[in-house]
Length: 282
Image (tube, rainbow, N blue to C red; front, top):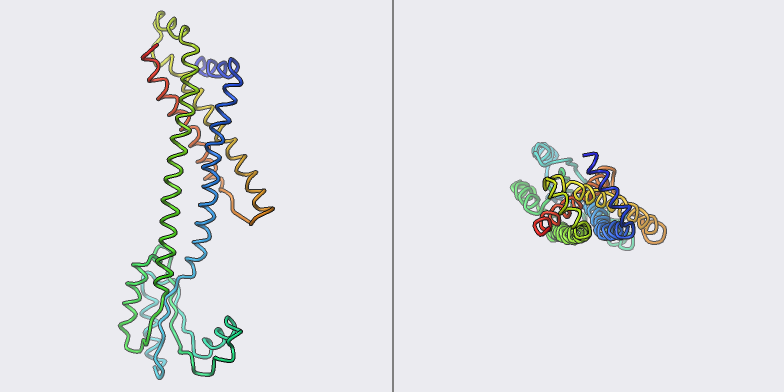
């Protein structure tokens, strides 16, 4: 292993420009993916904040007694999906309407808005199907005049979330394939440049594993360096975005480590594919 590592490091010294070019190309490929990852991360954070506002509002018919309302709230609070349940009286509904819709405050009069029961849901239970099913369970109470949960809005929210996830996965796979091809090409050039040396090593009895090891280490190192460089570029881009565009979040330590590990894995896979194919020709 020590000999293989030394040979891999010597490969960097033999062709520094080619090595630098390959690392830079890998870095920019991963950087493009990292930028999209930052966009996806901040979209997900924004959607999570919006998702926290998903609630079911059941409007109570006039004349409903406090005892019936309290019993219903106890039942609803026992739902496994329920995060919190609260009663909004007519007076509270009026105050909130006047506060949120100040330009129409003169329109709202005492008793014009009904009382309501507001149910907020736990994370994992805010998808359209679950919200609709819970709303139907609340509708069975006789005193519920109407129930609203922004059905169209909830469906659009989750549709956007699914589209963002699919786009991120597709783009990530595309850039991963591009990076594998780039690394494979650089390793192939290294194999061809050392074709005579490899032939001699085979004549003296070197196994394919022994010959392959330096190239695999070289691809691993290039992928790791490319991943670190891409992470640095993404951090620089975030500083520029935060200063001139909008405040955005960056990857946490775990996600950053996964990104570097992904670069290393891509380098290793690209090297393995290229070496395995070209050793058969040498």
